[in-house]
Image (cartoon, rainbow, N blue to C red; front, side, top):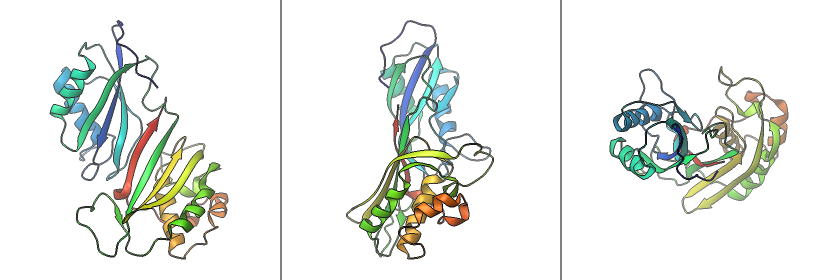
Length: 255
């Protein structure tokens, strides 16, 4: 969605894009007795505007998950210019969170409900020796990874499927478990292996379970052609374990 020019209406709808390091944070949504991205963001907004307007986030992310691109929508009658708001918010935000863009958008824009899709990337350090500088930012996997095999196996995720087998069921997940995966790829860059997935939406822990299933294939505990059958079973127990949160990044949000 393109940012529009400043309007002259009383209430402005702002699209705010941020990035954050989730290592020491408990996801986006405010929680009791835990520091979250939303809490820190709202504190910065209050310091700048004097109040906390209604804020909508594009996705819920779990404890330890990172975001290279996360979008917030916020309606306010404050007249601060977008470029000044960006600078002011960054002054009050901790180093783990940064505002990368602020612009005005149409009144009906909603950070979550206006999305057309998202891309997540899972990062794996594939070396025998762990790296202290990657701790909390990548899963350390010491055994060889056959990238070509896993890339071929991952293509079975692509398409419109009921992904019940790849979802942690709780009160947050109700109704339709069908999602459309547009792309899934596994590739290597030096010592790191990346698993990238783009879809119209994601279920709770969906990407991490997809990754855990591919790693179980790598370990020889599942067949490389087992994913279609796992999807058909609609049973969480049929898939692999949930990979740790540390390697997961919300990479891009599409509007």
